[in-house]
Image (cartoon, rainbow, N blue to C red; front, side, top):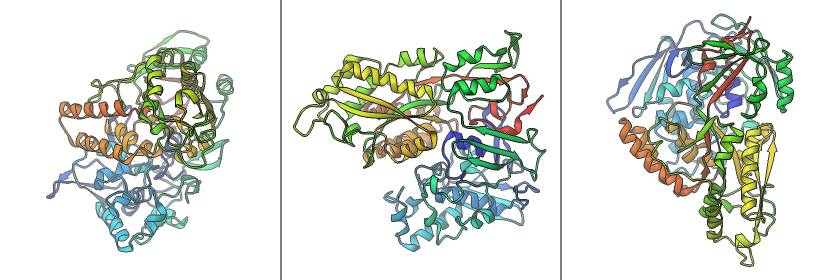
Length: 585
């Protein structure tokens, strides 16, 4: 529930109802923005040192849900905290890159990055350096309560800056007074290191909230349900739906029955295959661009919008060095009953897995033909996307790469002869990810019957913790853009969030970082595409991922539910639901 630490779609979708940002998306357009807690969107001023300066005026009369007024100091504090407390599992890099040109605040203490993701060593660092790092962060965002202004200084122009401020809870505004009262950081530069990198399950405000948004958290029963109620102190018109109950129901059949009976207003689909059953309830098929609808079944209870562009994708990641004590690597050695912790540090094994994945079967059987093979980590239409080599399904090449591996058992027996066993993780209830695991397991078992992959499902919170702890040797993951820019794909996959969870080697990360930094600073789309084309070739050669397919989005909703079309929920960058836009008729 901590907006500055949470970095996954389920939490982000919830938090957008409780907290608010300075700006937000202009309806369904992911590239257009409107003020929210700010009175207006200021024009930036170029500074003498080549940076940019934004001066924001904070909206007057806004209150937090406890009735206390929002101040400019709260806004500044929120950005300080977001940049300082987050480790590689958090979204803080989205702000530190823009404001300070570093991936992690600890690099202000040690520029070499030795402290990144290491809270205990950070705490033991030189006190003067720690204070100086905090003061550098504070100098990037200053405030004046009297004039209700916040001044933001960027070290260099940053094209996606407004998108970053609108994109998610990392830029959400919290109450400094309330956060400090919970025992969290009080803005003292002498203590920030004590709050850096606290695991999400141990966070001080992990289970409590207090924002300016249209809803407040009434209750949270982990693994069961979350209840939101309308914020009585909300600064705009009160929410039309006064109470929202979000239930955790893992079986699609149960969710479907609840929707059919009118006991649920929205349900999550586990895969494209679930759309077949949903289509039986559709009355109106509507155009997502024009909202023109055609009645196809007078007895139906839903309307549907199909064929919308997607900004997310599911992929498979290899972990180069699995954490000690993992229970997902079998025996933990190459003896036919397990794999060593560094199994996927062998590029031939990674390439073999890529060749063994049947992408056409995935698209046809799992996505029901409603998708296409990705050419790069990024999305169609983004610079460099089309200039990318890709792996094709080829069992002969899969076998060839496995045989090229130099990995052997203790007695010298080659991998091909001794075989292996490992488990592939996915989140329970996600039948699409389950199918990905099963397709890969079947094909690799076909190539060599001594190769065993066991798909393993874990509840979402456990799955996320296990993934972050680097316990899985191989895992299915999803990524939804934070901002509509290729930088937001390359950074998390190659140098940030997922690179950390995969334990990518430092030399590999540094190699990627050179081109990533060149690309984000280049303003000419053609030249940017050339840079990313080079990067895509490196990604292909290293094969650190199995890059899958992009599917289109589909939206089903009851006929009585209003407010989705054209609003925030129509926007592909908005996770789950922004309930303030909804009403029932």
